Image 1 (cartoon, rainbow, N blue to C red):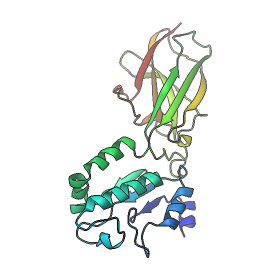
Image 2 (image 1 turned 90 degrees about the horizontal axis):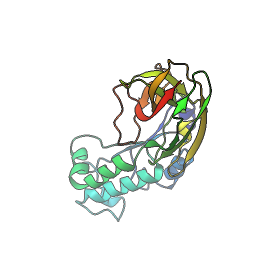
Image 3 (image 1 turned 120 degrees about the horizontal axis):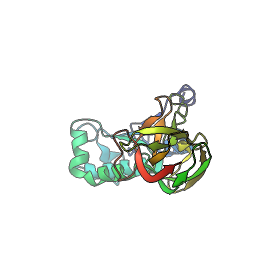
Image 4 (image 1 turned 180 degrees about the vertical axis):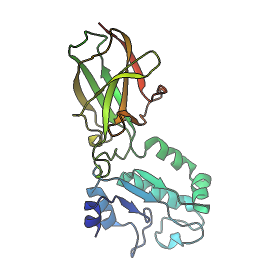
Length: 246
C-alpha cells in the first residue's frame, strides 16, 4: 500500500517517530523503510501525544515517567536519522511541552532540519560584451538533514538555480536559468559544482549579479529562501557583485 501511494504522488509521514511500542511504534521496519527513501521523498514527523493521552514510559525503559523531554529527545533523534523535512509538534499541551521542556531541540531543528541551501563559492565575470558568452562558476551546499523535494510529481522539477542582471533598484533585467543544475540532488555535507554559460542581451551599463532558486512556473521569480544572512532585494534576488556590460 505504501509503494502504491508513493507511485501516486504521496509523501511519507509517521505519527510514531520516537515511540517504540513493539506493536505499533516506530521500530526497525519503519526506520529501514524511511532510510530507503532518504533524498528521494520528503518525510514528515508528527510529535507524540504524550502529555495526557499516552503512558510513554511503558513503551521504552529509557523514558522516565513525568519527563516528556525524554520522549522529545527520542523523537528528535529519530527525526534526524530519518532526515525528516518537517516536524509537526501537534497542538495545545503537546506543542507547549516542546517549548517548555525541549526548546533547545526546537532551535536545533530550525538550524539543522529540513533543507538549507546556499552557494558557498561563486565565480562571476566583472565585465561582459553584449551578445558574447561568459561563464559563471557556482558551487552549492545543503547543510540541512533533508532535501529540496524538487522531484515530487506535483512540482516536476520546477525550482532551478538562476542568475540575473539586476538594475540599480534590485529588479531583474535579464534572467539566466541553469537547467543542468538540480537542487534535489544536494545532500548534506557534499559540495556541488557547476559551470554555466550566459549571453547577456541588455543595454550597455553597470548591473549587479543576483542569484536565486526560482520557480520556473511563475515567471522565474525567486521561490526558495536561501540559507544566507544577506537579505534579498525587494524582488527576492540576492545581490552579489557588480558587472559591466559593454
